[in-house]
Image (cartoon, rainbow, N blue to C red):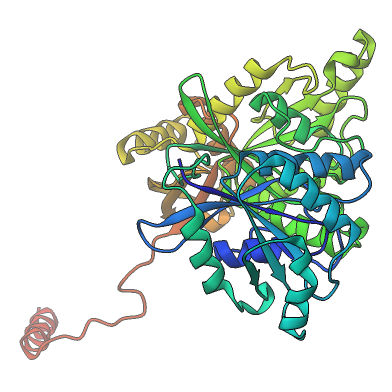
Length: 465
């Protein structure tokens, strides 16, 4: 368990910039627009091999306690309550404010070790700033400019001195055996609600307001003896609808989460069917070649007729991915979670299965003998051998001749044959066809003097006969 440092303050004082500077990452979204951060975001500050601690970035606490603002404040309070040290971040350029006073009053009631951190000190008169914040009564005031990495060394030195050896935070270790699951979909289909239901706590802000989640938040989970990393992502919309700069950053973070996951859970809204936006999200998953599970959410609120109509629409609109398993769930009530995880495990096992060269060659041999390729312009493609080319997705590299003429229908036949033989469910399958080249093509065999003399004697002998 590592010591945990929480960054707390009002909106737009630079908490996310400080978080990125301490963790040396770009994990937190940063923009001049207030209120970009909403959920808690955890990272690790590594000083050396043996000395590191956790940092949690929080959303700004504002005067409004209703709706999203209130939920964001609740997340910040939860982070502060579990922290071993709180960095109360204020803005040097704005000076003290009534909201800062309220936040400080709450922090004092919390009775957690707290440091005053004055950010954006660049371009200001430091002594004047310090004198203004002196009324808060802190014995130590730290000044930094996170955007310019000014004062960070002094900050780290002070933080390390005040942290206990054992803390309350658990580091997220990149264990290759931990299954990485990304929950993706368009806005307001219930991704955050589902992650909260699986975790059994209000870890993510879930709201009926579309676009509530702006960042990709990762949370580790152990369930039934297996370890997972759940990634809640921002909703993806069509490019033409994405206008705000912050939303563009959110889209990038979501696409990165899809690339880094092993299984993508595409969430659909049962009450709205399959929309063009859903197809756009599905396209991103297919482009990344990730294992796929389709989860139809809000299933519990439908009548039998509505369920029948939803089933028909899904099978028609998603007919081009028949290998993806579809489950019906209710993120709000938790129904269907067992079936969801069963489908996730099956897709993950198929996507990460390691094949031997002998078994895939045997499969290719049987497929070839059962249904040989058709003749194209009098020539038949020859499939000589195949070997595994990687996993997630399973990739097979086929070698042979005249493979450029191999029809798409035969390539689909091979894919379906391999799927059925190796029981590959929930994952795309990739075939790469490589034609063998003749190493002697374009080269002339140069005869030696002895061969030339022998050839002349043979010609002379034939003429003499």
